[in-house]
Length: 167
Length: 277
Image 1 (tube, each protein chain N blue to C red):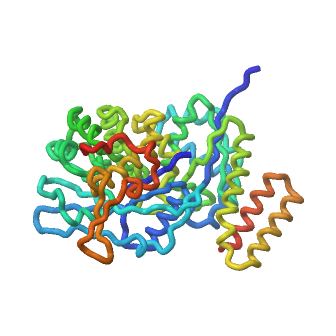
Image 2 (image 1 turned 90 degrees about the vertical axis):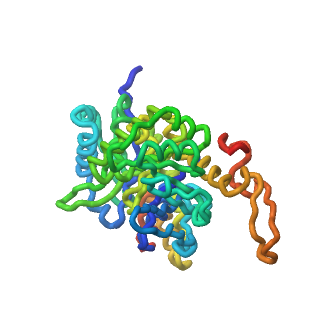
Image 3 (image 1 turned 90 degrees about the horizontal axis):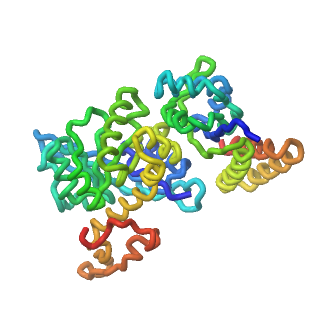
C-alpha cells in the first residue's frame, strides 16, 4: 500500500494580547502563511504551497494550529514561517508569531503530543492560582469537561477555563 | 530535548519590556539568555563602557523554563562595535563585570585581529549592511581553533525585507568559509514578538546555509561552549578561580572546576577549553 505522505506542523500562535486570538479563523492563517511563503521563496514557493497545503485545525482559545505540508518540501515552506509577524483578519492586524512545537507524520501523533503538552501547561499554570477556591474551580471545570466531550476537547477546555481565571 | 540558549537579547531601559522578553524566551524553551549591552565608541569623545544592571534588579522573579522545573538563567553580555583597534582594550576592568564579551569588527584588519588575538567569546557578523570585507579562511580557521564563535542574529531579517537579504547573504558567505562550525544563531530581539522558537531557528539555519546537525548545534551545544569559554576567560584555564571571601579580603579561594561550571557534566564539556586557551 502506498499513501501520499504529508507533514503536520503543530504550531502555537504567540500574541501579546490573548483576547485577540479569538478573532482568528482558518482562512486568515492560511492566507498569512501563503503570503509569507510567496514573500520569502517567490513564485516557486507559492507554487509548492498551493499543493496540499491546508490549515487542518485551529483552536482560537489556545492559539494552536495544525498545518499540513507535502512531505517533499516541508522544510522549505517551514523556513518561511518565522517571517510572519502579523495576521490580518476582519480588517485588523494581529501582531503574532508562530512557534513550532512538533512535526508529525500523521495527525494522530500530533494530537497525542498536543494532549501531553496541554497537560504540561496545566501543571505549569496551576500554581499561579491565587486562592484555594480558584484551584477548586479549575479542578471542577476539568472534571465536568471530561464527562461530556471527547478526550481532546476536554483537555483544551480545561486549559482555556484556567486561563480565564488567571486574568 | 536539548538545552537551548539565546545569547542576545537587546538591553532596553524599559524594565517591563525586558521582563516580557525574558518571559517569552522562557515560554519558548530557552533555558539561558544573555542581555546584550552595545558599546559603540566614536572617535570624537571618550565614552564610558556601560555597566551592567544586576539581574535581580531587572527582573523580580525569574520565570520557569518551558518543559523544565528550573528558572531561566540570565547572563550579561557586552558587544563592542569596533572601527579602530584602540576601541578594544584588553584586560580592561570594565569587561570583567560582564559574563560574555563580544566584538563586531567593521574592517578586514580588525576582523583578522579579533579572530587571531583578541580575548573574546563571540564575533558578531553585521546583518544590517553589505559585508564590508570578505571572510578569509585563515582568520576564520584560527578563530575556530581558539574556540571563538561567530554570531548571526535573525531579528533584523524578520523586521525588514532588505535586511533579510543582507542577513542571508552575509550568513551564507560566512558558512561557506567556516563550514558551519562554531556558529551561533541568536535573536537580538528588542520586543517579545521578535523572538522565535528554537525549532524554528534550527529550520531557519537551512536558509543560512547550515546543515541539519550544525543548525541544531547553533542554538544548543555551541552556545554552551561559548558560556564555558567565557568562564575560562575569567578563571585560569577554567581550573583555578580566585574570589574575594567576605571575611578576609586578602584571602583567596581555590575553586575546583566542578564548582565553576557545576551545571555541565564533565563529559559533555566543549572541546575548546584546553589549557592553552
